[in-house]
Amino acid sequence: MAKSKNKNNYLVQGTILAISSIVSRFIGMLYRVPLTNIIGDTGMGYYSSAYELYNLALILSSYSIPVAVSKLVSGMESKKQYRNAHRVFLTALKIAAAVGAIASAAVYFLAEAWAKLVRNMPVAIPLRVLAPTIFVFAVMGVFRGYFQGKRTMVPTALSQLIEQVVHAVVSIVAAYRLMLLHNASADMEAYGAAGGTLGALIGAVVAFLVLLGVYGMNHGFIRKRVKKDHTGADSSPAVITRLFVMTVVPIILSQTVYQLSGTIDNALFGQLMILQGKSEETTSLLWGLYANKYRMLTNLPVAIATALGTSIVPALANTWAIGDDDGVRRKIASSVRFNMLIAIPSAVGLGVLAEPVIRLLFSGTEIEQSAGLLTAGSVAVVFFAYSTLTNGILQGIDKMKLPVYHAAVSLVLHVACLALMLGVFRLDAYGLVIGNVLYALCVCALNWRAIARHAEYRQEIRSTFLMPTLCAAVMGAVAYLAYHGLYLLTERNMISVLAAIAAAVVCYGLLLVVTRTVSEEELLGFPKGGSLVRLLKRARLLP
Image 1 (cartoon, rainbow, N blue to C red):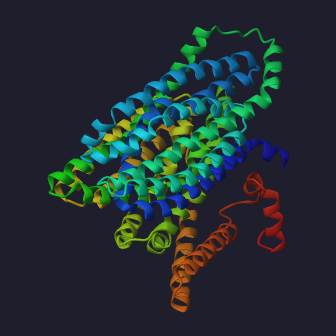
Image 2: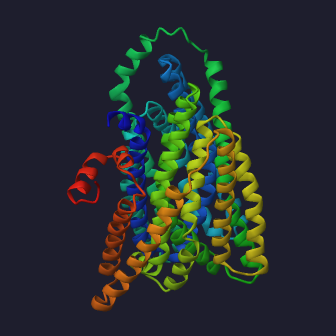
């Protein structure tokens, strides 16, 4: 059992980060409900559009840093090169501060140009408020990557949770206050969106202070390890800088191309909708339905894949470096399997309960259309979960350029499909959903082939994909019947939704055990797996 726990430590660390990411995204989803009710779907369209350029700048300056730092620090710490590991941290800190400051300034001064590009001038207001957040995230990413490289996700998880709580509270209060202050302005909703983006800035600042405090508490221990480093490996700052840049650039390119799909969607959608005679307000409303409801809900379960991808990079880098090919394949298999066990039922659940969930979370008159988008595109959860995780796997086995190439090829196909869906078939927001699904599917197919070739890994199909899908299909039927049956009796949407979700979770879990889709050994490798196995044996569900 100890061996199993040690072997799957990256899964435990990934689960810690996954739980934090899910809770953080759940908080993000919850605060968007009152925020949407305060500023409306049009205001959320401004808010989401501002986030497209912000996210692109954030990827260029910040998102790649934790992965690069964790990969380098993990490799050096495994060789007990503590001095070099700390030099990576200090070098990355200087580079991140400089790049973050430039990116923040660029977004601030280009806010109006972006607003013109998406044919939505009020977007510049929330975007300028959001701009300084990029600098904070760039510096904070170095601290998160440093701790992740030391194989602990707790500081990152803690800072994420605190960041989201502060973000939620400040966003709601600031949006309400700014709407009141500017209630006579034609851009009242845009000022409300600016209140929402202010929450992102304040949340990031508080989270950074938390990480700074954790680092300060461990600074003495870190200095001792650096002083006791007798490996003789003492790379110069120039060598460390070159190594960091060579590691971070492919990750930046990969994530930039990944993010470009949303940025291009926003620009292309705005241009084509205006050409088709739709007003700026209608365009912003449709984009808000897609970005604020469909994408937000489908991104929630993908948080698990993001967390596993983050945790597997340093774990795989270490295993790959020592030439343990069997260990690499075991880590790939367990992470993909764990990911799919959650992503597949999440997609089914969102598809089956789309309208009740939308009705539970959001008020307004666009419930039916929002639910239609979610039902049509719920399968994207599986594709994005797999593609996100496999990007991390390829980075972990030193195939840094492949995710860039795969994302670029998929982006070309995506843009062609989107232009067809919007310009020829005029599917509006449904065209965005189809393009979104196609993009993720293309990345999945290319990553699957690359991992098979470079890691000599053959993906197991039955228990990783087929059986979870079968169990999820039965679960979906149970959820559907539970919701509609209870709603006929109570006519209470909230009670019916929560009861249907609870029934679905219990049903799916039991089916996994009864059909032996998940073995006792695998359960023991999960966090709190021992307690779960004992409970199942008492219930006579395991021999």
